[in-house]
Length: 169
View 1: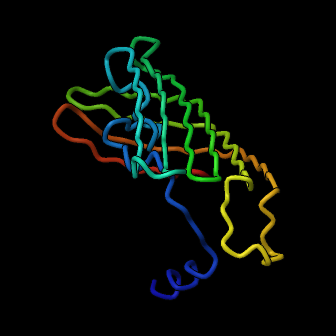
View 2 (view 1 turned 135 degrees about the vertical axis):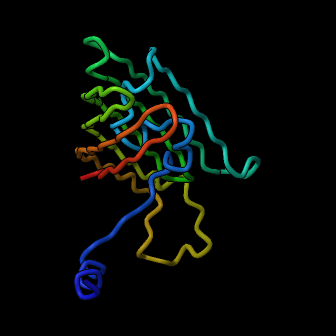
């Protein structure tokens, strides 16, 4: 088992996405399994401004909407996320669907989410201390985008939840 974990460490990489720091306020952003788990239309708006007063400080905006359909068996929703950190601009959107199996006192929810992420680097927002560095061209604007998906599972009721998820696959 130790060899598997050591081998995986050499061939894996990750980055924490900013909306994960606010997952308690917006659980659907963290895991698609929570889509449609509320018994009403769930609209969430999050705003986070870190390091207020500093130029280029991180700002995060999240808007999500999800609801139950088909007598509570299906949850559908969407999410729009914008994150600005200095010269970096991230814009993400997601569509989510979840299926709910009801039991006497509990439910199991299976969720899947399709994600689109667009990242932009604005070189003119960078202040260089050493203008002689040829490796840094502050007049470059670079764009990149990607599609991925996430899925999750949750077993829950009003007293507890037990969950697992795989994000950004």
